[in-house]
Image (tube, rainbow, N blue to C red; front, side):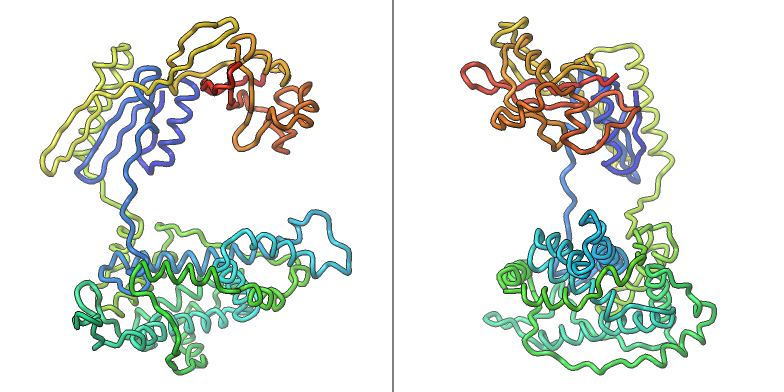
Length: 514
């Protein structure tokens, strides 16, 4: 059996899928502060863990994050998103552009060397939404042309300008669009009321430790993207000296800039951007980029956010607190920011002991092979206190009426724990189709492996060619990937129909390779 790690839902779902595949029990348990839960999964007796899902977490409205935060959680999420966009997404976009030449396959002819990579990258972008396509090209141009650093001092200057845009100019523009004394038309109530806090721009001050923390962390992350050694990080005086050389343009409000006040307006803005003709602007941006051939060997290093990385958290905390300062929200120190941004809830020994004891009782029942009604799932909240038990639900059943073959007349109530095992590694596609006809009197109309369609009764030309192939060779041919030597099984999904062309649903096929 298995007991998944008390982490997120993803490893639990992975372990559950493996337990269902191999027919093994799983003891699921977890704690969240004073809350705890246990769930027992028994092959054939209970439903799998994946049969039920927790409701999705409530997300913060986009307009609240972008323009109207009122809690430190909002500013931390905004800082996380800013980190992701500046140090991860833009870097991935650049690497995608630089790798376009490799994606085209063989090296292009010299005359087409400059055009082929751009065409490949452009084709990839054509699959995205118009607004996303434009944003991607703007990020790539900024990274490779407008703000490409050569030395660490360039990263410091970039960080200073980003500070100006994020915490001064954008806030000043917001107040230009929505002045502090603005009244809502019709009702006459102040626009900046309730959850909406009127912001104020932050003027950069090299004497303010928070301002320097932001610049130092942003510059260091930018340098790590480009593989530049942070030479000016040893002395704040050197940092301030570099900052004194940065030319910051005075803010000039722009007319015609639309800022969404609600999520509905944000959606309208996105729809409007999708209908605008952005192709010309995209072509201009693409033409302004240096060719990948001229940047041969260049590859940026993306930063994947890690709450345990002090540099990452110093940036997120500084960025969040500056945003909080804009909106007069109480700030959070590095430790508090780490807990909130990482969604960490401290473990309580009492809850852990209770859950461990409850799940151990279920383990004893598994060893004794108890019936379904003996098992119990539990939810506890020691803060109330609350302790509730429930019996695990049996697995959902699907009725399949077998029309013919060796199993003619069988009414098979199969569950997610059931499967069709085939232990013939050298079986061909023709033999597999005959197997379903002989055993169940059913015709295979489609056979797939993952997202790859191996056989379809409609594609007669390909079907005829693939009939003599072994299943292993067929999978490798269609997926264009070799099956690893240590892989013992593959799963196959089938669409089956009887002689009246009525679909009959059967479990998946577990095909043994060796």
